[in-house]
Image 1: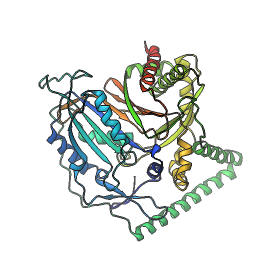
Image 2: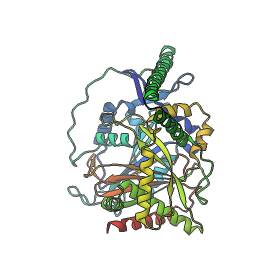
Image 3: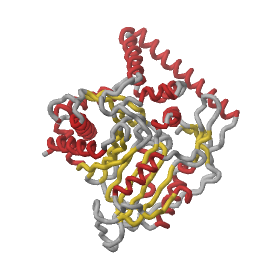
Image 4: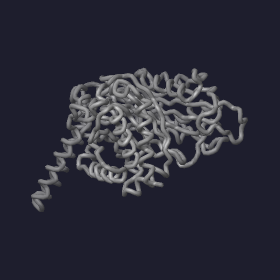
Amino acid sequence: MISVSDDIVRMSQSDMFTWRMEQNPVLRSTVVVVILLDASPDWERFCATVARAVQVLPAMRRRLVPDRGLAPPRWVDDPDFDVSWHLHHLDAPHPRNLAGVLDVARTAGMTAFDPARPMWEFTLLDGLDTGYGDTHCDDTDSDAPAAAVVMKFHHSLTDGVGAVAIAAEIMDLERAGTPRPPVPETASAARAPSILSTAGWYATTATGLVRGVVRTTSGLGARMLLRPIRALREVAGTSVSVARIVEPVMRTASPVMTERSTRRRFATLDVPVKSLTRAGHAAGGTLNDAFLAGTVLGIRAYHRRHGTDVDHLRVTMPLNLRADDEAAFGGNRITLLRIAIPCDASTPHELIERIHEVIEGWRREPAVPLAEPIAGALNILPSSAVGAMLEHVDFLASDVPGSPVPLYLAGGRITRQYVFGPTIGASFNITLLSYVDDCCLGIDVDVAAVPDIDVLVECLAAGFDEVAGLAR
């Protein structure tokens, strides 16, 4: 999301890329978060907390309005906004357990948003049977029913880092609540498009493009005079880097996970934070490298269960581009990298080393800072071309840092929280959200690609166990 002025807010080119690709429903970009609680939250308090968050985060009360020509759509204030429309309080369906919650969550993930309203909704599921997760309630009735909250929002509204910003506004550090100052009144509003503002966008974009070309050309000219060979190498390197980022992928590396559909199933796994952190460090890598290694080992085992093998896989990974001082909520500040990951390492140690080398190489790609202009160029292409780039990726993996301390939601202590990111054309999405001592893994599976989700989850669990062996 980009702000042209205080009252004109347009989609960024990256957000527009996420929005446009939904012309193919397989590429739908709905994010679902499942929060498990040790006790039923106070509904009135929950509603009041969310209502306050809507005032703090104006994007939550805005809807999209298309503009003319190539101009990105606008986020405008919904004149009929009613926070109660986005909040639902239901009795948990049968079975009253995690499986039932995940069924509600996957249904939400497969259901398109109403474009006439802001694209988010929260559902409280009450009356779950206790007996899964940590249901101990330290200062309320021990027989209080467990509950869950299913949060759904569109990826163009925010990315994983932005979702953490939402959490900061509605979650507490104590069961009794966290004191928050009143939200000051504001008169600013995001206006609907007009011909003049659209013309202004074209003028501003053209001016920015010319300035960028002049700045780049002058800088390049100076370097050409001082170090001509080095300057030519830089130009060639950036061109090749851009080509690598936008290169279409015409077939899956996996010979098994090849089909695609709009049907989804959700599953979860929990892995200790210390296990992945220590395993990554033991092999000279990071927690994220160990996370990818565990996933790759699991997929390799899944292929072997199907009587075949695979020497590499292609993964889509979001790379965070936010500056340290940039607002966390509002739009996406990521670029999607499609990376070939080796699967033929003989040990988990070797696999983490090789993955670390590959990922660090991609982080240094010259074209990564050019995410916005690249997205702008892709937005001119037919949506079928975007599908060719994404539909044949084998899996999507994302790592989102969460809270290292326990959190509460309207009186209920959060025991687990899982993010189910969109598959965006891949066979499945696996998203890691760290919370206290656990890495909570949300797995969103395309049923056509992986019809036997239980087998996949079993193989992934074994893969992470292999990686955790490095920490023992």
